[in-house]
Each structure stands twice: as C-alpha cells, then as structure tokens.
Image 1 (tube, helix red, strand yellow):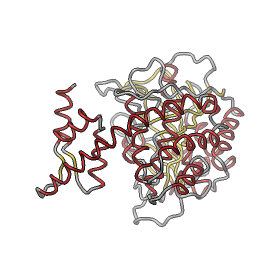
Image 2 (tube, rainbow, N blue to C red; image 1 turned 90 degrees about the vertical axis):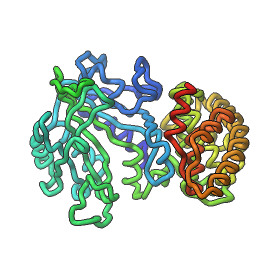
Image 3 (cartoon, rainbow, N blue to C red; image 1 turned 180 degrees about the vertical axis):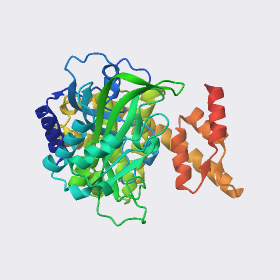
Image 4 (cartoon, rainbow, N blue to C red; image 1 turned 30 degrees about the vertical axis):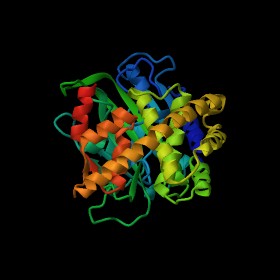
Length: 422
C-alpha cells in the first residue's frame, strides 16, 4: 500500500466517523515563536486544545507536514528522518478513551488489514501526577487485544507533552511486531531492539503542565493522535527501511546509478536532506546563519558534502530536484508550483558552499595531521572556531569529518569561543 493510499484511507475513515478534514499547517509556524518548525500535528491546534472553539468543530482529522531537527546527525541510519508526515485525528472535548481506542483498532485491522496478532499496545503505569490508566487497557481488551500484549510504562514511554509547558497527558501507543526474534525473555515494545515498531500514539490530554512542573486539569478532555506515514508505508510494504519505499526509492536508485563510490549512509543522507530542504523551501524557508535558516543551510550543505563523498557531480542536483518533484507532486502539488524557486534557492546555496568546502577541508586536513602527529585524537575548539569564523565552515561538518577519521572535536572549547563571538 503506497503512502498516498494510506493517507487517503485515513482521512476518509475519520470523515466517516464525523471528523472534518482540515489542511496541513505550513512547516514554518504562524504566530508561534517558541519553535523553528512545526514538529507535531498538535502544535497548530494548541489554542483549541486549551478550550478555544475551532471553526471546523470538535472532531478534526488531517495530515501534518513536520520537521524535527534534533536527529539530523542520525539521518543516514535505517530509520531517522528530518521531514516526515503525521496523520492525526482530534477530539476537542468530545469523545475520549473508549471511542479513540476502538477507532484506532478498527482502522488498523479493517482498513489496513493488519492481523491482530501483529499488534501490541502500551498504557501509562501511573505515578503521583496521574493514576494508572486501567481504563485504556480495558478498552484495548474490549476491542480485541489480548491482555498479554498490553504493557504498562511510566512517563518516559507513555506520557506526551510538546516542550516544557503546555497541554499534556498519558498516552497509549500501538506497536507492530516485525516478526524478528525476541532479543531476550524480557523483550517488549520499550526495548528498542527492532522487533516492535511504534506506529501510532493516542494522547489523552487531561492536564496542563506549567514551567514549574505543576499539573492542573484542563477544562476539557481532548484526544490528540499521531500516526507516522513513512513508517507505516515501510511496514505495510514489508520493507526494512523507509528509504526502500516509493517516497525515496527514485532518488536512491538515481544516486546508485550516478555514484562512483558506494556508501548507503551517504545515499540516504542525500535523499532525505533533499526532500526535507525542498519541503522547507516550498513553505517559505530560506538559508541563513540563524534559526530555521541555519537548519535549512545545514541540511543543504550536509547533502552536498555527501554527494561529494559519493563522487557525484553537483551539476546533477538540478536533475535530482526534478525527479523528486515528479515523484512527490501527487502528495504535495505545491512542489510543482514552486519548482523553479526551490531550484534557485538550493542551487545558489550549493554554489556558496562549494567555495567554503574546498578551503575548509584543506585546512581541516592540515590541522588533523598536526594533531595526529602529536599522538592526540581531539581537534582543538580553537581550530573548529577558526574554520567557522574564517571559512564559514559549519562546526557540525568539522565534527562529522573528525568522526570519519576516528577523531573528536573539543565542543566545550568551541562553544565557549562561539559565545564570546556572539
């Protein structure tokens, strides 16, 4: 089942259950200075979760474009993505646990035809702030999940809040059993061995947490859910990674055809960062040295460095953008509308970085050889800062180069110098 089929089935299913389809908010938040990008489906809906009246009613459903930046360095492994799409359904003071659980169960088993034996769920174990969520566990039993596949965990696993303060509450998470053998007798959905993959998270928003860590009851009960589209497509297609799905395969294949050096991690980085950069640019983001502009610059520059590692001519970047637009335009028509702008922004940033990269890498190699000849394994923070200040060389690129050569950077010293510089 392709990603767009899953998305369409989801929206139709919840429409059938009285939800109004609302459009995705842009990646660049409107009137929300607390975050650089929209990171979750609930973010644009916070005023309504707190009690304001939504113009479309009390049952909503959507797909939300999201960017999360805390895992950029992890992109290149078999699962991390910077840009992703989250499917969500919302109850603003309407239905609560039982109906939410039943609809989730029905969608997974009837619309996506996932066998019940492939599903396990987790619920909140309870603490001094909120009691054990036996109600949700009973709802799952009633829906059809056997007791031995219902697990209870604490706040680290089964509590959701966006940021330090805001609406929050216990959640229940659904996991897909990949069929891999158990890693141990204690193997369960929280262990992270890869046997269980989280597919959906239903948050029962009952509380507001303030900056002092105090919880108070919200004036209405809400349900806030999130289902990761790329991950679900991967599982339903029987793939090991999202990069094998139709969302990424055309670029992965083209890179394999163009590369002179085979490196799967670099292919994934180029593929993921290209899609993320295009989506951010399409929604109005532009490269710069601060805030979200710096994130976009970082994504484009990391992508270019890994094209170089694959020994692919940077002239191919225009073709790669064309392939992505063609592949993704059904899901995101704005990519085609804004194609020329996207190209101009990314190619201009590429030209700027090529000059930076050539000078900075030469300097890095000189410094690295000096450090190694002294029998050390850490690039001094002064050097990292000089590369940044003199050559515009991003510190995370220096760190990546160091890691590739079995070395580290002195982050603490760099950050001290950077703060003085600021």
